[in-house]
Each structure stands twice: as C-alpha cells, then as structure tokens.
Amino acid sequence: MLLREDAEQLLAMALKEFAPDWEIVDPVTEVTIRDQDHWLSGIGTYGTTLRNRHTSAVKVLGRRGGDDPANHHRGVSYLVLEAYGDRNTDPIWRYFQEVCVAECQKGPRRAGLRLGAGR
Image 1 (cartoon, rainbow, N blue to C red):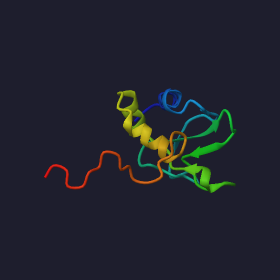
Image 2 (image 1 turned 135 degrees about the vertical axis):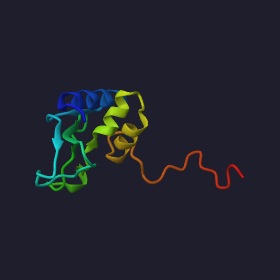
Image 3 (image 1 turned 90 degrees about the vertical axis):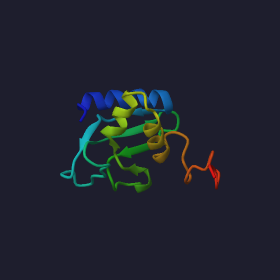
Image 4 (image 1 turned 30 degrees about the vertical axis):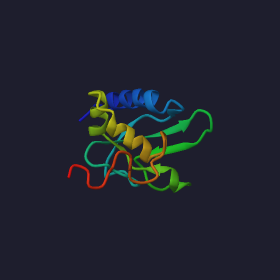
C-alpha cells in the first residue's frame, strides 16, 4: 500500500510524462467502499479529479455518477502506481488510455498480433 502523498506524487509524475495536458486539481485520496459513489479498482484504489489545461475538460477518477457520467472512471490502483514507480510504465499508460487522458484506446490493441504466429 502507498501513502496518499506517494500516490499523488507518482500520479503527478506519470501525468507529466504521458499526459502533460492534464493536471491534478483535487487531492489524491484513497477510495473505499464507505464512499457513497466509489468506483474501486480493488484494494488500495486512489481517486482524484484531473483537468485538461487547454480545454478545461474534467475526469473524475474513483467515483461514479455526477453531472456527466462519461467523465467518471474507476480509480487508479496502488499496484499501477507502484509499477510506475519501479519504471514499469505499461500499466499506467494503459490506465491513461482507458480514461482518455492519453491517446484513447478504442478497442483491443491489435498491433503486432498475428494469427497463427509461432506455429
């Protein structure tokens, strides 16, 4: 498990590296089942609000509901943040694609997939 401050620092670093147009605008907090509108990613989920510096678009991480449900997404797991801290960047990149703060993933990745490869 990460301290809240460490989770916030890792998320800020990952945003700077992979989604520099986005910034954290609310403190990163741990999301629990006690939260009425929680959207967990398992044990040790963190949530916050992100804002695009240029468009003012907002993404709410770790909460369901609100005025625009399309901008609400599951929280980020501490495992994803720890992996980023260990320089395994794939999990955070995939998460950023899922919540569309980095290049949006529109479906399963097909690059490099060849049917029958290895036969």
